[in-house]
Length: 234
Ligand SMILES: [Zn+2]
Image (cartoon, rainbow, N blue to C red):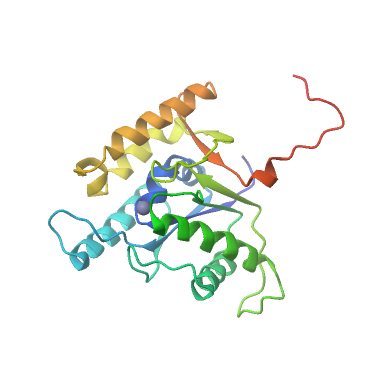
């Protein structure tokens, strides 16, 4: 792809977007595109030994290490794990980030999740995406329209998730896997086999689109409308 674009992935917790669309992010960064990860919270609760403050500090370092390894930038917003609220204040904060960074593509969580922060992030990003593009929402920076909003595949956001857009990540798989090991929980969680799940998922999605490895995304059902003069044929 010749035109350089900017992809922004907004996740509830540091590690969410890194795992669910990290292959795509690595692929774009490898090809010279701009990539920004926005973490709404560090995801600092639930470490088996560290307290929240200690783990937040570690997650901040892990998020930076992941971003550095794939050639991206990471932003950590000042919200708390498990306490993220989808208020207009938070939505306009994210709107301002979108207007400042001017991404072409946004990726975030699917709307239906077992984790309240994930569902809140979906609602925050959906409205921030809308606010960012409308001039009449008067902010310090001018409006910015994002070309596309996609929802990443996450084992915690499974309800009614329908993979629709498949993207080949074969060329970036090794880099992504190396980078994702920056996060302690990915390889050492006592609760879930993150590394095994997401690497296996990339094989499954790859098989479904006849590639070696791929990541799949859902889209808003309204944007699934395809308009042709005739049925397309190969
Ligand atoms: Zn999460």
